[in-house]
Length: 285
Image (cartoon, rainbow, N blue to C red; front, side):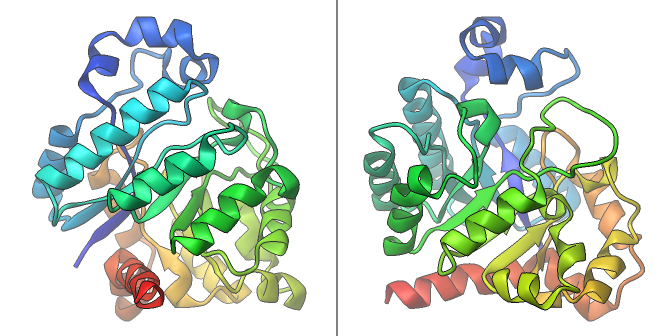
């Protein structure tokens, strides 16, 4: 089984009228003004999955500021799950600091969504460490047994579009404030795994999983071995591509070149994410 824990798709009207939405949302413009920045549909994703032998993908939207665009995106994700129920798992797009945040989470939970995210603090102008602002989101996610997927970024290295300041200390503050929430920290948690050699960080991250979305742009494949050496549990590593920013084919080749044990590789490619999803369902029962 192969599960892609991190993909993005867009409603067709956003793809066909991209320039209008670039003007409407400054963070969307930051990430997608480049003509090479691709917007994929549900059908594009399914085609990619079929070509690369991927069974299921977690589908996310985009962290819009506008409530109407958030609802449009979530409706599209819900339609994709209805159309491809065995292939797609939806995570809800929300604005954590909007008044209707919890209502949208509740609505999406009723539609069968399994998580929230990808959170993008800079795009919606909040800090991941602002526990007061994020408490309604975190508490609702816990009550509805939803996983939280958040963007993170490394505090060093080259600058790129979307490299917002969601550094390891921001992620650590969020984990400390909401220790019972199940969290997937995208892009290797901005480097937090390498602090697992500190016992207090290892304890803090007991409910944190790390995805490798777009990591081929950031790290040598040896990052997998480095994370394991640092004390990250093998079952807390999940494979994610960040499709369509990077191809699923490239990200599969990336993890398969990592020279990790076959059992660890197979678990990261799907079993770990499936177990996490199953554990959330068990809690619901």
